[in-house]
Amino acid sequence: MERQVWRGAILALCWLVSWSGGLAEGKAQTGERSSTPARRAIVVDERFSALWEKPGWEGQLRRRLRRGREVWLIGPPRVRQQERFHRVAVSRRTRGWIHEAALVRPGERADGERLWRVIEETEDDYVKVSLARLCALHFRGQPAASHALWLLGETMTRVAYRLTLEAERRLGEIDPSRRRPAMMGFVSLDRYHRLGVSFLYDEASGTLRYDGAAFEELRKRYPRSAEAQRIPSPPLPLLPPP
Image 1 (cartoon, rainbow, N blue to C red):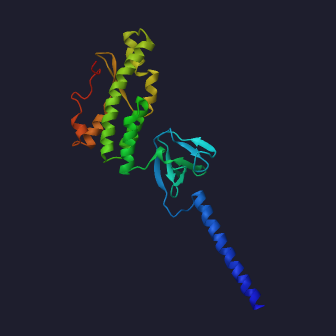
Image 2 (image 1 turned 120 degrees about the vertical axis):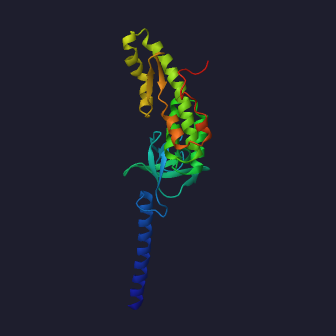
Image 3 (image 1 turned 135 degrees about the vertical axis):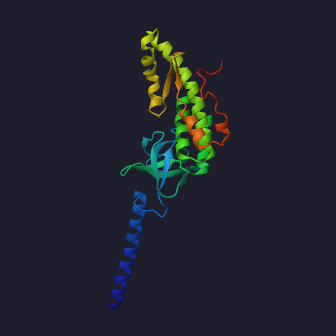
């Protein structure tokens, strides 16, 4: 009888340990608890921003995350096929695995430098401006932020010139009294407006200009940086040199 009691106690203890381990594993998988605190991250590279059901390339694709999307890193990364994947929480109900190259962690100097390299390699002006804004916002106080603000201002100076030519070509002859609203309401400006970038209209030349907000922020936040010393005076030429 005593032997049966001991046997029952041992079986109960084994069951309890097994149940506790399974519960802990389940919570770790759902992100409810983890020995590693969740950390905020930002999606910056849409080439790698696929959200997978499992770590690796062979699993089910759940969705693709847009640039600028905020996620939370859950637990340590995993290596699959010599590539590192992070488990992330996109919302309360949406979780998955994403390649580490898609993400940066705000404030991490190494991530800021990596983002700056991505910006430098980007040829598309819209993507370059979008990434530069993210870099300036999430890596304040770091060299990458001052680099990004300068590049943002320089790029938008060129973009405003290009959009002026595009608007003139697509809008054709415009009555002088309606030129300003036609230029300022030109559809190709919309995507930049959604990034928080603003334009001005120069009455004398009839051209679009970037409002110079990035240069002003650069001068205010990083007055001693090498980039701040490069800000032209007057701040923005109407047209870039030929």
